[in-house]
Length: 188
Image (cartoon, rainbow, N blue to C red; front, side, top):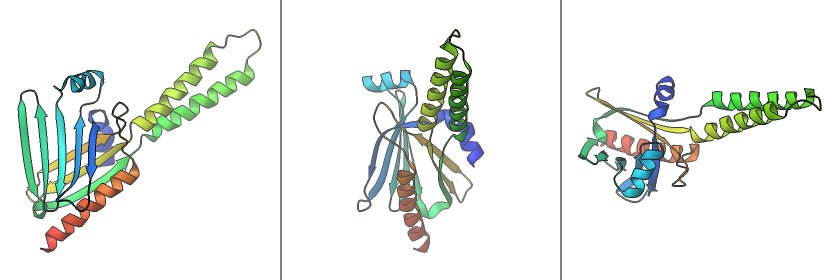
């Protein structure tokens, strides 16, 4: 599952809006859009394609909307066979950031006063890019598999522009709500 998430990480949706209310009928609403500058500009114009996941006490609803229409899917929680949630972090980016920061420090210590400072600045900037990428590429993973072996796979990542963060605490909260409702439906 984790390898699949890493493979699909580039297609993760950027979170535009989040609403969590444990006491409401619709307990979780996550609205996402495609990542990228063009998608952001289209969202400013109101013509972006969005994806909405809603978790109710007894069902899941996914709504995929685009300029050409909307598709809505409803899955009763009692029809779920498995539910998986998680959170991925691209640790390799963190490792690369540390390596380039160490190389920059080593270069700074080894350089003579006649050498150029360009390699030091380049390594430092490269290190910063990897550290920023590490924080931006964290993803919330939600998967739902029905008894008929149909599966739905969701990847959401933080939005810098909208200022919405997707972190481990949020992932746990969503996971706990879905798990609690899923267990209540299977007991009913």
